[in-house]
Image: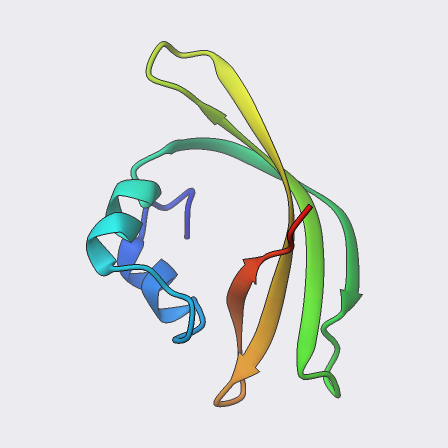
Length: 90
C-alpha cells in the first residue's frame, strides 16, 4: 500500500480503534518508500487473532537522502482480516 501510494487501502487495513484520518494517511502514502526488510514475525497464523512483524522500512526524504525506520508492529484480526493496530513501545 505504501509503495503504491494507496491511502484508501491504508485506511481500510488500519484497525478502526487506532487509525488516523484519511487525510493524514494520504500524506503518509505520498512518501517515496524504497523497500521493506522483514526481520521477524510472531504469531499471525491461521488460528491466531494477533500477530507481530518487526521490520526496517527505507524511504527517500525531500533531499533524496535514503532514510530508514525500524519498527515492531502489532496486527489484529477485524472481521476476519488482518489489520495494523500500532507500533510497540520501545
